[in-house]
Amino acid sequence: MSRSKSLLLFPAVLVVGLALAATQWVMQPKQSELTFTAIQAGAPFQGKFEEFEADIRFDPGDIANSRFEVKIQLASVNTKDRERDDILRGADLFAVHKWPTATYVAERFEHRGGTKFAAYGMLTLRDVTREVPIEFTFETNESGAWLKGTGKLNRLDFGVGQGEWRDTSGVANEVQVQYALLLTKS
Picture 1 (cartoon, rainbow, N blue to C red):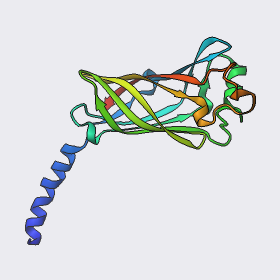
Picture 2 (picture 1 turned 90 degrees about the vertical axis):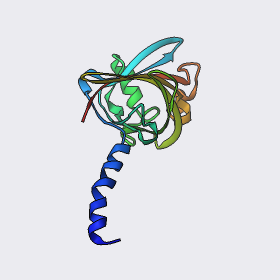
Picture 3 (picture 1 turned 135 degrees about the vertical axis):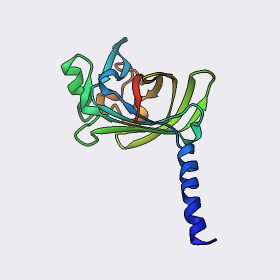
Picture 4 (picture 1 turned 30 degrees about the horizontal axis):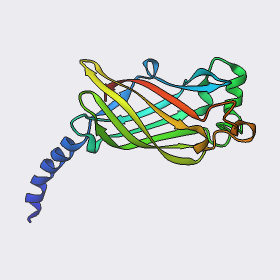
């Protein structure tokens, strides 16, 4: 193929490549939330992460080229109980001095009908990586989109619970995660 023909094909290849890329979204941090519910001494308590970033590339019509990457600053945990928050940040639970962030990356998605989807991503927490599936809805409007959903994990699978905190009679193993992300197109 001549050089001039290959130069003419370049824009076509570029356009096709762009058409295959899922939409890039920008999370609006002030309107977005990442929370969790755990059980301590038989009673549920809620917490949230005040600082996290979400790199969302998603298109309901192109889930094969979609991707989520969420980075959570673990020291930003807030359960509205200073003593509990300090314990969560400590060496036996999040160990933020050694592992300040947790990361969730999803590249495999499933459409469950309508606005419902599932993602099968890998969570890295305390230097342990395991698959954590999540369920979510993705609803667009004229100004952007809402990505809302839930997931659950067992904290001990990630080493969150050393020493006395390994005992699940005081703090349950299962943790529910909830999120609501307001997104705008980049």
